[in-house]
Amino acid sequence: MDILIEQEIALHHYEVRQNLSEINRLLHHSFIEVGKSGCTYDFSSIVDIMQSESPSNSKVHSQDFECVELATATKLLLYKSAVIDEYGEVNHFAKRSSIWVFTGTCWQLKYHQGTPCSPFELEHN
Image (cartoon, rainbow, N blue to C red):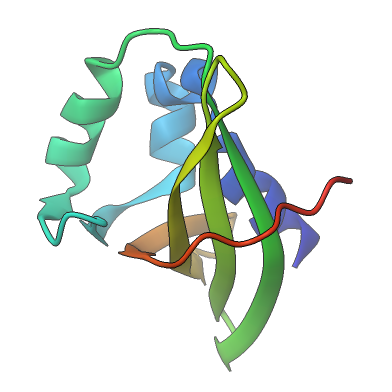
């Protein structure tokens, strides 16, 4: 589970989201996301979105990770996230689910969904 958490958190970082080789390593070619807005994105549209992002002083906080084995090479990663802006304000609370598949050489994110949720207390590591 640790590698999936590390890879999931890596995708929250601007530098990774700007690196096309990292995106190709982490996202499956048939990737689909259903965002908090309810909009659906495929691999190419999410790459376009990530590549058009500007640097920000906001950061994504994630916690309460749980991993469920769906099959030998398929894992469901569940967690909560929130965005902490440059002023320390916490917003955009969401419950997240990611399906990771092992391709024979590495784990790749195949499906991701974010669902808005009520604010929760942030755990500090």
